[in-house]
Image 1 (cartoon, rainbow, N blue to C red):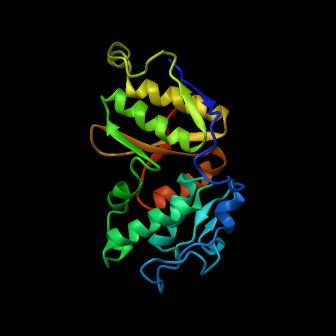
Image 2: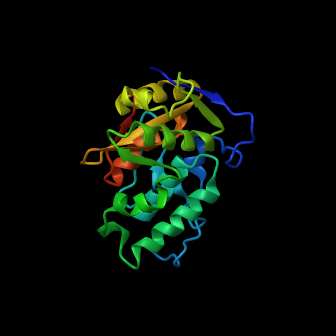
Length: 219
């Protein structure tokens, strides 16, 4: 089973795509040290915090957690900086005055990005996974062909595994320049997000710096 993503004929839901990989290196990011409640991400050069050289990417040890969160949100909202800004504001609200360096970042991000820029479903719930992946792909103006007339059919879902769905979706998304990521949840659920494939190296650097274990869904 391998779904084939196909471009929708309707207009894309997100704004015009930024040009990767320069987007990460040159996008302005928030300075959490002296920012107001909603940091305006225009205060310093992210080159001080992340170097996007695919052969030697690294995070500056002085990069704050909120800076890294902002960069992660940009990556999982390709071409949609407004969505990243809204989610970053919600993340700051969830901090409720706490220091971002002292909290479980992923626990706060879950309530901000799930069913918007990410998925998180039970490992045995193929139907919920198909629904969430379809919603995420629609943001990139893509639609999945699940090789069945009705992907909500009970008989189809009974024989579909989330592992196979994720692997097939990942392989096909790669053909269109996207990567489907999964992250470690520590329980019987599957979770992750989609990004531009050109941001793979950035994801491999930024996510671990935030304590998030990620891997391509096909890996």
